[in-house]
Every structure is written in structure tokens, then in C-alpha cells.
Image (cartoon, one colour):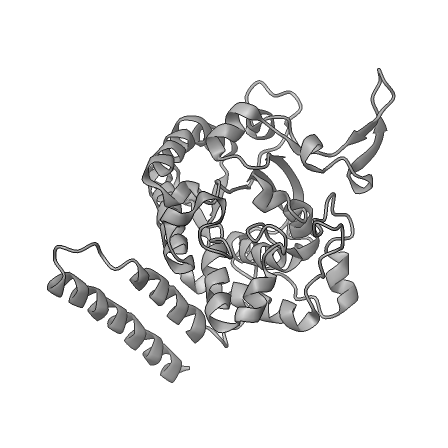
Length: 351
């Protein structure tokens, strides 16, 4: 144990010396964007035998989800409830595909159009006027989801709110600033009303550079570093406005993806939807859910040990995305799930 501690300390010293070297010998250049990701990779590597921490900080939590298709692909909200086996007491969401957090505020929920009108989404109730089935598509607007004041239907507050921006949003200065302004002007008052802790997802860079007009964002590593810096700027903007008990946190999903990219390239490719190469596959959602659980509760979720236990995690999913031909995308194997679970567990040390 002492040897591991000393080794990790030497890694930190090495990273610091590396940064000092870059600043000393390249004073007029842009700071090395890879240092932080190198640090994260070293921490993840050295946490290989990290033991599961004791108790979650808050069990039976109420978790709201605000974002886009990165969350609704493979129904991450319901998946996290099943994955946690009791750690999440209740979830609800306001999701809309292809939007950033500013557009989501203005346009509201889009899940009837985006795929939550399925058998698993049926509530068992019917509308009074037309007699049509009612579906669990989430709250119609962000304000309806998070608002406490003047909301007679809300009797309890949220403990955590999971946000994700459009993946390219944090990576570009202009859109990064726009989201920071929206978070402070629109979302912050609702976080304060709820006394909720914001969890901001660092989404994963695309599988292929240049898709979806992302050529200017560079390689996978460069793209990911820009996303991470943008998400950190959101945290820095919110931090002084929130009490210490609700200190904002980053869920380092993209950093976890990048670790898999460097350590197991075959599995990294399987984290992406095989048709569009940027949405998460079920394996990607599994990793995302595990990272979220670690970020929210400080411990990993229970590890599923059989194919049946893995399949159960999506037993009530409102939508599972398949290939263009309609074929189902395979769920993670037991071996892959254990590997991804460990990657997520190590991400605690990198938060």
C-alpha cells in the first residue's frame, strides 16, 4: 500500500515537472493540452486495484436528467435506476435530441418525436379526451422538471441534476460562453431552489474525426481535451454561486472513453453506435451509467455478473437504438462489463 502511494506521488511530481518544463521552454506557446489528460490516464492506470469505497454519500437519491440524445439513447435515466439497485429512488427528465442546454430551455422536451412512444413507455393511463395511451416521455420543459416555486405538482426537490450539453458545445469558445451564461441565468436559480448538486457530463469525442462538422476540433485526444476544458469552465462558473454542499461535479465519461481508446481499442469502437459513430451503444451507455453512479455516490454500482443481469438493466428501456437495418446492437458481455465497470471505478480518482 505504501509503495503504491509513493508511486502515485511520484507521478504527480512528474506531471508537475512536465508542466513546468513546457512553461519554461515554450513561454510563448499555447499550454500543452495533453498534460491534463496524461495525468488522468496515469491516475486511472494506477487505480487498477482501487477497492470499492464504503457507503454511498446519499442513498435513494432523486435524480433529474437534462440534455439530449447522449442520455436518451438506450434510456440512460431508467438504466441508472436499474444499475444502482436502490441508490436512485426516482428519476425524471427533460430531453431533446440534437440540442444544447440553451436550445433545450427554449424548445422543451422532444421525446414523443424522438422515440419514447413505445410499449415500455406506456404509463397504463389514457387521456381523458381522445382516449389515447399516455407515455412517460419526461417533463415538458426544464422549468416543469426543476421548478419548485409555483409548481403545485412538485412536493419534493431533486438531489442531483445530470446535465449534458451538445458534445461540440463545450469544445468551442463561443458556444462554451453561451452555455455558461445560460447555466448562470436560467438553470442556477432552479438548482438553488432544489438545493440540488449539478452533475455535468463530459461527453465523449466522436469515434471518427471530422464527422458532424467537427474537423476543426482535431484528433480524438484534442477534441476530448477541448470538451473537458469547456465542462470545467461550466463548473468554475457555477461553483462560487452554489453552497459547498452542492458543489458542482464533472462526470468524466469522455476521459473514461479515452482511457479505453488507449488501453483496448477494439472495445473502444464498441462504445459507439455502429451507424452514426457518435451516440453511445449499449456498451457506451453502460460505461456512462457507471461513471455517473461513481460521480454521484462516490462508489461504483453493483457489478452485474451474468448475461441475464446485464439484460435486466434495460428490461424497461423506453427505447433501444439499433442499426440502420433495424438489427439490435449487442449488449456488453460479462467480461466487457467488468472491464468498463473498473474503468468507471478508477474515474473517481480523476474527478
